Length: 420
Ligand code: UD1
Image (cartoon, rainbow, N blue to C red; front, side, top):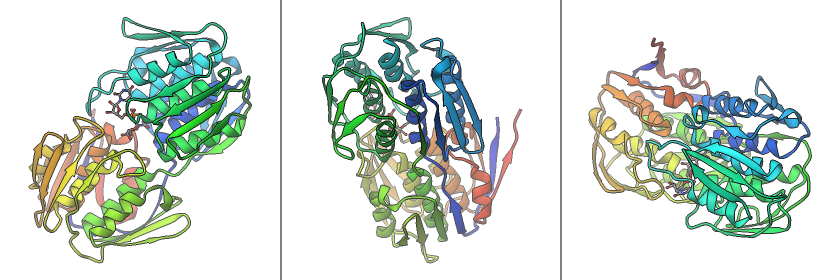
């Protein structure tokens, strides 16, 4: 297993180009199943999760090529509607092929995603929504069997909680349904907006964009299109956090400041100078130690759960103390014991963490536990005294394109040590 060897103490400085969003490209790839005309997606990040979904879609018989940052998909060769456990278990977002397969072919057999380290993460809301559109769903031997006679029928979908994947899945099912579907309590994440934009380019009729009520008027068929993936707001925030924790100055380019106001507000509250341009954001910590800031994770446009671990790491060396509440996932503090191994002072009670900032962290051997938690350990190591080895970094390869090159270009002392 590969590891990172990081020597802390360097102040990060410079500019970093942000990649396309992992959480946007996955539903966009799934949406290609909705038409038999070719689709070209650009600004695709080269990530393990993207490759997993490409493998899954290719396994359906789809012709798919991936060169540079461009994926070309031709689903006219699709032969089956089966997503096997071996692929789905490695990535929960694989469930996103359920809606498109069902809508276009009237049937799908998709493995249930395995339990995930950051909580049980069921898919009950996805299945309930499909049933509201007339699908017959059976869960048997770890597989979801979904079918419908003819087309799905437009209907009323009310989610019990805000679910990003659930909203995406039902959107992709509803676009080819017969009649109008109203989706209430819909997620409003920018990645949903990106999906809606691509579906509308393909000929779908979706209104209510950026609100929690989406109205879909079903059409009989969709056509091909070309689409560029929206910038990764979480990667952007992660590099800004790296600047904040090292007292540095970093400009993120090819990004969008409008997608992450809640996070930028927190950086400003920490004492950083944040400057925004049309497609860039610069954070200057002015060589200061950040002030610890309290926050609560909530669905967009509030503070995203995917930035919780990184800001927790910055808080660990902050001035004063802060409380962080995680309201989206029940087990998303696994980075805390690892940060504590590096000298952080963090107490967890249920879904709340109280952080008392310490002046310095110390390098230590630590273990990555999930994608965003991994980045928090990397930036903690960048700010720590001495050497840190971060183990199990396969988590980070799922979601951060060229992380070593990007951090090195900013002045970080980080190396990948190849494992067996
Ligand atoms: C997506 C993101 C992930 C992010 C999360 C919340 C992708 C590929 N992943 O994950 O990075 O952290 O949104 O912003 O886009 N839930 C249920 N039943 C369901 C569906 C969800 O109980 O059927 C619960 C989940 O367990 C969780 C909460 O709802 O507690 C939110 O989950 P959801 O928004 O669906 O997350 P994902 O789409 O899996």
